[in-house]
Amino acid sequence: MENKPTPQNTPHNMHDEITLKDIILKVQEWYRLLLGKWKLLLLAGVLGAAIGLVSTLSKTTTYKAELVFVTAEGDEGGMGKLASLGSQFGLSLGGGSSSAFGGENLLELMKSRRLVEQTLFDSMINEQGQRERLLERYLLRDTANITEETVPVELQATNENPNYRQDSLLAIIHQSITEEKLSVARVDEEKAFINVEFNDQDEYFAKAFVEHLTDNVTSFYLQTKTRQSKENIQLLELKADSIENELSKAMVAAAISKDQNKFVTNTQGLVQSAKKQMQAQMLSTMYGEVVKNLELSKTMAAHNEPLIQVIDAPRFPLEKDKASKLKGLVFGGVIAGFLMALWIIGRGAFREMMGE
Image (cartoon, rainbow, N blue to C red; front, side):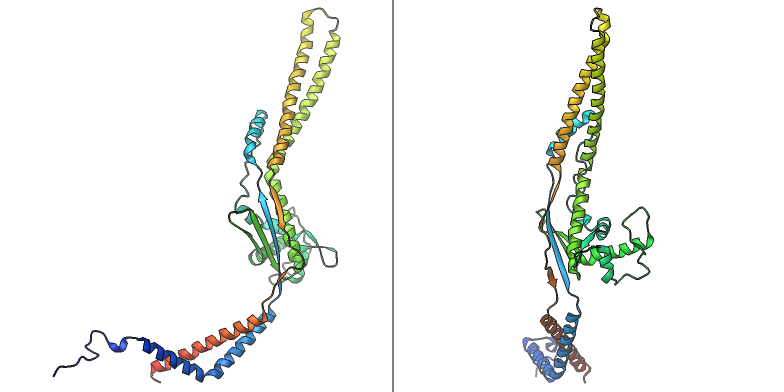
């Protein structure tokens, strides 16, 4: 008689293979197990829903202030002509810092500590129509990381007299604002539209902060971009004034010399008069060139001045960010029920494995 293969000597142990039938049977077993514990699942779902509702109700309502602006650089193609003319007088009229705030640098500039602090020391119009500093309004209600020891007796928007307590306080506020409340990003990577979003529990503060921050960044951006051009214009204006004064003196001297030698017939006596007239002509030519370069530099500076145009500004009422009560109930109940089901199934599997 042939010996039938036993599970021990077969190439593959049939008892170790999982079939579709085994999976279906196991799912049915879990279903019956959960069905027998429906009261426990229901209790977990109710408790989870209650926790979700309480969490939703305790969440502070925040307001979203959103501002969209677009940047446009001036046409710097003509700066080469201006630079060549300015080089005649030892001036640099090129746009050396044209890319200082290009690309992502402008986005980081809006989160810089310097401009955020400058914005906090600006004044806003509150609900009563009175002027109030943003920093003082912020300190009145946002004291999560601020203690009495860190608040200076008097807050001053100046760097002339550094204050350790004030700097520490502003560092905490700057970190909180830039990491939790302020978001700056491009609307589209291929476009120059920039979206500034600020979320805060104070509707008036959120709107004022976004508007003042954008104004301060715009002013700083324009001053930095046009500083070299303005400095060169000032130098040309000083040079033009200096040459004009010298030209006036030379013209008066030439006229006096001409009157003194009016009846002189000796040619040698007319040399000084001719020199003074020639000096006046040279100064006149130089003055004309400087004035021409001055007017050209003013025109080019205006043409190359970058533009920051606000497209959409925040308006009341601001958009509220408040979690839905229904979502809190459903989400809390589902999560709690799911966790309880996992615990029941895991406990049953452990007992089965231990042979209980």
